Image 1 (spheres, helix red, strand yellow):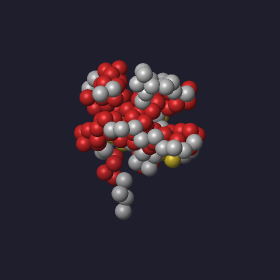
Image 2 (cartoon, rainbow, N blue to C red; image 1 turned 30 degrees about the horizontal axis):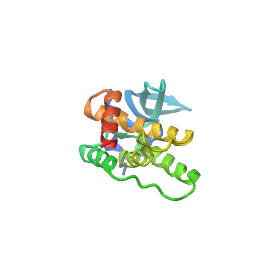
Image 3 (cartoon, rainbow, N blue to C red; image 1 turned 90 degrees about the horizontal axis):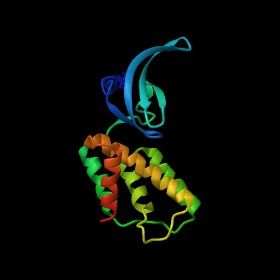
Image 4 (cartoon, rainbow, N blue to C red; image 1 turned 30 degrees about the vertical axis):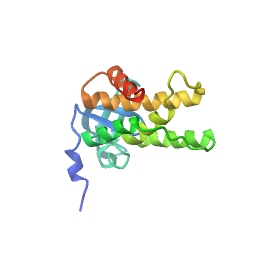
Length: 168
């Protein structure tokens, strides 16, 4: 009883996917490769921005969280999350930072949108710390890349769209 069989057709060469730890990448190839005497079917994902290539065994693709670009419903939920009021917990920054990092690493666009919303600062508000700014920019970049692929626009245009939602 191999339940992984349907996933073999789930990923195709040339399509965009999201790898939770690195964001949006493009499948360059699905190739067979001999590793330690065992032949594996690997999904080769390129992350142009990071100049990185990842080879993920087909059987492990869903376990590591590799997924297709979000559906329209999920994207709409993520964008409406940006319109909400920031929810900043009154706990130490180190704990909040860890929670934000976990949300970003989850690869879930709604969770990433929560981080962007909570850390976004208008020009008239107090300055962000360096680490706060880093986490904010990482989250914004991840979300913008997925929105860009979803809407077939450039990441810069997607980032502009997200910022316009945040400043309303």
